[in-house]
Length: 121
Image (tube, rainbow, N blue to C red; front, side, top):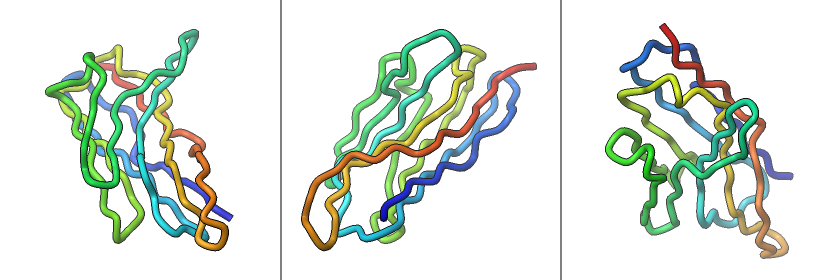
């Protein structure tokens, strides 16, 4: 019933910028926390940034000052603006959302399929 679709991943040079988008669709009553995670080859998936329904945000230390998370509740969309990208930012970036289902009011966690970000010259 619910799906998350990420977009915006690409190949970019060090120092460049990308904006990732994640759109939630389906039988959604509301969306609580939305977050971006990433997973590099051979490494654990890690939290990059999160945002609550009232726009409280948190960031991993390694992206503070470079990345900005935001959301557009009217579009059920969360964004991750990534500036000053470094090669170590290379990873698959995943969107996660805590969603309240419209009919049942059940709270469930959903993941997107991921979008590849590659930072290389």
